Image (cartoon, rainbow, N blue to C red; front, side):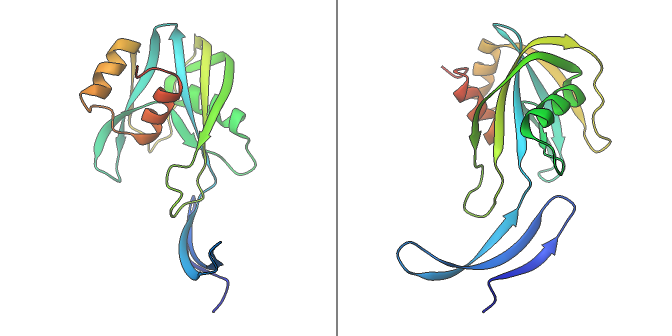
Length: 170
């Protein structure tokens, strides 16, 4: 049995199988989605004001609320990607941007790591979303964000994790 067998190689992700030996000695063949990694930015306009996006996600066929996020380009570091995505998706740049955590959104079958940043000292520029992104930007208070979460209007897992890590859901 070969160690690794690619099933699909795409522009962003690849799918392959791999033979592994688990810590308990069991041998298994697993399926892995290889992903270059991503970032998510929690943009603070002020102590109590945040920027949230309402973005159309064609895979699920609906709009969802989420913080700005995006995939790392080849050779691009997480901080550079965070600055790029913040400006592309919101039209803002940040004087201060700090990594606060990283998460593994689906470690059962994907290598993706999402690096989470907080951004402060925002200045308005102009948004230039990718052509395949349908985005509307919203400014809201922490209280409105909390209310939307409690009403199950925020369903994006990475946004919920980032909000929790920033203490926004208390």
